[in-house]
Length: 135
Image 1 (tube, rainbow, N blue to C red):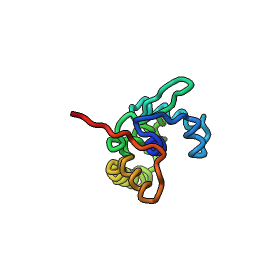
Image 2: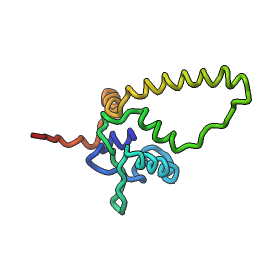
Image 3: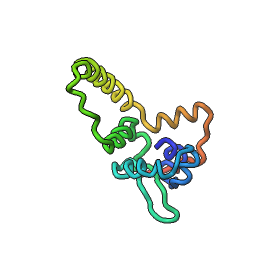
């Protein structure tokens, strides 16, 4: 999501091949994630030889929590460990507390914020968002 936001935003497309090359990941490995993000509305998918992906919403309207929730909804439920009293009484409540803290923190960080952090570190975006005016 950050690579797509950084390189195009909502104005242009990033192909799966480009994304795989820049991130060093296998294309067939990232395609299911991209499809999941498209189904959630966080990405728009354009098919065809000149197809690719772009953000489904403005960068400022997509939080890290939005992304995590979209991807996690597509994963199988964790194993049931309720028969183990240490897990049930100690580990599970601890993870629930940590999960809530992380969820709150991630909800506060948008793709826009991550783009600003990248620019502060000297990274240059190849394509700037077009200036739009409304009357």
